Image (cartoon, rainbow, N blue to C red):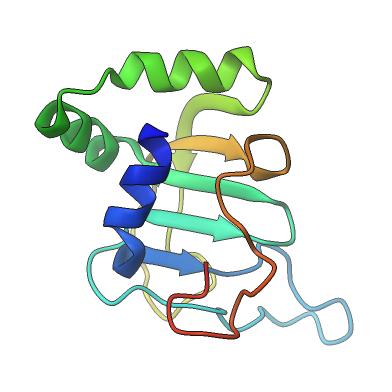
Length: 125
């Protein structure tokens, strides 16, 4: 529930882009949705992974008095990831930003993002 609240509060900070190149051309696919502000969340529909800037999520958890560790423990417990690693959040866009520490979530298990209507409406997710 806490993760859903974070994502709902930061829909404008979401990048939706495939991780892999187009197999026919070898070119990077265009983003399905680009952020309107700072980039907090990256969702890759082709891999079903969500990456959340861990500093942004941690700060939000402090503000909302929610246990960041509780979120990661629950993700690990359900087998949906919950590990922190380096991620180039803007990969696949025109931005050239350095990697950040990001929480990795397997959306196929966690089902945090409903991608059935991706790119079909404003917000997409």
